[in-house]
Image: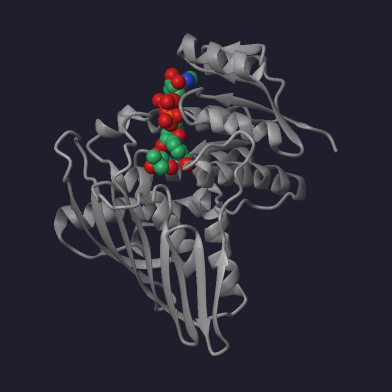
Amino acid sequence: MTELKGALIGCGFFAVNQMHAWNDVRGAGIVAICDRDPERLKVVGDQFGIDRRYGDAEALFADGGFDFVDIATTVQSHRFLVEMAARNKVPAICQKPFAKTLSDAKAMVEACRNAGIPLMVHENFRWQTPIQAVRNALEADAIGTPFWGRFSFRSAYDVFSGQPYLAEGERFIIEDLGIHTLDIARYILGDVRSLTARTKRVNPAIKGEDVATILLDHENGATSVVDVSYATKLSREPFPETLIELDGSEGTIRLTQGYCLQVTNAKGTTTTDVSPRLLSWASRPWHNIQESVYAIQQHWVDQLERGAEHSTSGADNLKTFALVEAAYDSAARGQTIDVGAML
Ligand code: NAD
Ligand code: 89V
């Protein structure tokens, strides 16, 4: 198999995971990197032995010599860089949050569609081993038709030391973390018709909201709650686990802390350890996220080879991003939002 050549733009905190994962992925490798911060360019270039280094994305594209671009910058530059990839007809992966606004996200999908290039959003949480296990149990018809769900991420983990920008934005937990939880809710229970949200800021040292509770009406008639918090001090810190409860016509699924999956139905209850693997370069407690980075990047290569759409394509992610915008809108206006009308 010919190895696909990739270029990575943005060599910050999270990109290091992406670079490790590219080393492990079958069928692709990174040949060039770009960051406007020379220090980050040097740190990542030296760590991963990449000689082709650029301080400017235009110069990177002008030199070319790669089959895809992996955009790992923060959200402010996503539209600009995805549109640059489209102009250069280079398939692109873009980190979450996909864009600042839904209209930007729609324009990015349109630009890539017009250019005829694949676009995948690096929405990796659905690729976590425990989330895949829940989806597999549902697909195996373990609990019949699900009618209710809860997708919960409650923590007091200090995310601000690694990602200081998270303390500075007007928007915080829904845009950064809830976006993953909302995507998991869609992945498990299907698309959403309408949504109602409430938010709070508990930590006085940050600008945005750090608590959100979101009620989702799914198109298939199921109801779910997405609840996320970075202000929840527990005896055993669960970061970065998403806990899931699903009730179905024939049984229940519970994904509890410690990566424990419990399925109850007429046959009884089975309990399975669905812990993620600790990859050679990973470290606890991040290993759950790190393994999913590897999984989504392998999926990128596999789908390119098959010529098939990616699970978290730009078009798919519009439906998750709409939930983010709807949640902020609902919390601000105290109203239920018709999500279908936004798409
Ligand atoms: P960061 O600030 O540490 O790194 C971003 C890097 O991009 C910086 O080094 C910056 O100099 C560079 N950059 C910004 N604009 C650029 C441009 N136009 N051209 C070249 N370089 C540019 O941020 P981070 O914490 O690594 O986060 C990056 C993205 O990853 C964010 O969107 C964040 O939400 C996302 N993220 C995703 C996950 C996940 O699990 N999917 C986890 C953490 C962060
Ligand atoms: O996954 C993320 O997007 C991260 C974190 C887990 C810290 O919220 O920003």
